[in-house]
Length: 305
Image (cartoon, rainbow, N blue to C red; front, side, top):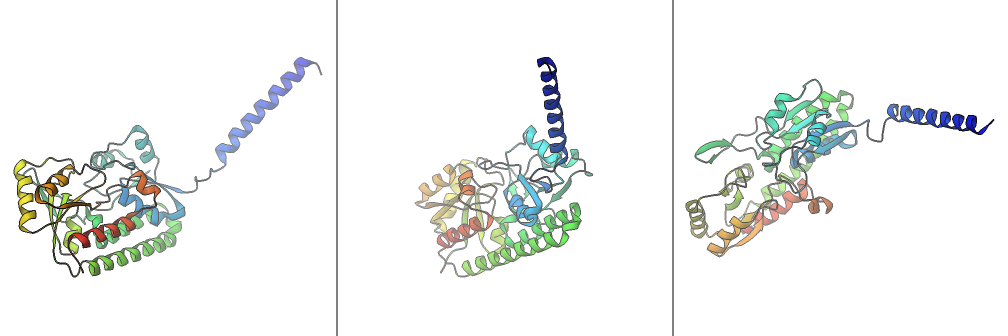
């Protein structure tokens, strides 16, 4: 065989090999292609869905680590991720993009589960208007109801694994029952009941455990209170001997620090779990560990025994 024919034959073998390789990889499932694709609006839904979906689901959190979900807007890549998911889990009332997404997604391709729907019973006055408080995940008893809704979503999109999702959901609800028991016991005997928080994210937690929340800002952590509002909160702190002012890890602590300095109080984190930082995630923190840390900080602030 001369050089030209040999070279042509070699090229032919290479082309056939490339085509065969492409066909093989197109038809052969990748490592995770067997998993159900699920997108979630922000961290609490991500944690619950991940626990329920287990190794049957590939769950992606649309709001990235270190981002505040009240302000986050999905990127084009986020939108593609949502559109390629079998289920989108939202809380409702937190994700500013959620309403438009519900209008534009094809319901035949992507099931939308609004986990907080029907659970949001509290109102907060903000800017002179009454606004529905969406922070239901802060109450473990309400979080269990969110878990039920997410479980039903998994069953709807993947009925062949109903028993698997049911078992995972029951295990998660048992953990939430334990968490609820720890909060009830830990906050049963406290000298104080008033908590001053950086924004109104703890209304359901306060109601569940018979506390009084006084928020520096409304539902949005970026809102700017007036000088009078700040003065009123400082006056409340003095009159009620509040010695710890709470702030959040994902937003500026400036307002909490200002009031604490004004009244001679300390500051401490009370995490609304709207998102975890990259460092927290790397350290293995999750919904359960952060809630228990919140409990420890509440016990200190409320002088519990």
